[in-house]
Image: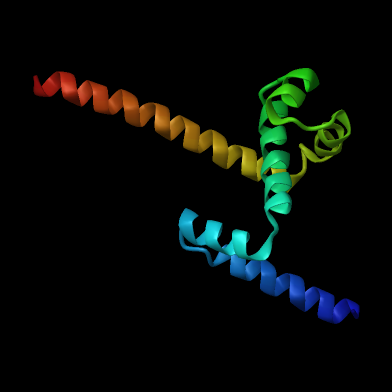
Amino acid sequence: MSKNIESQVYKILYQVIADSKNEVEAEILLKSLLTESELSALAKRLAIAVFLDKGQSYDKIKDILKVSSATIASVALNVNSKGMQTAIARIKAGEWADVWSIKISRALEKLMK
């Protein structure tokens, strides 16, 4: 494949992923494009990055995700890349929003009693 065609193919892929309107659409797309093992590997790599960001040990990550030290080391090399940091920041924002949503709900329940 020529570099020009390769560039166009990747651009189309990135655009299709970016155009996913929600989690369900993204899931359908990725499950259609990737094998189960490819999707699992991708999800585990993201989880490894999150665990590393939270300071988890290689042993704990290996135990939880059932991955090798080599896989963890490979992700660790890229954990500070712009893409990984963007993904981690989005995950942290989602976790923060979930925590505050629960706190606000509980506070409102108390007020309504």
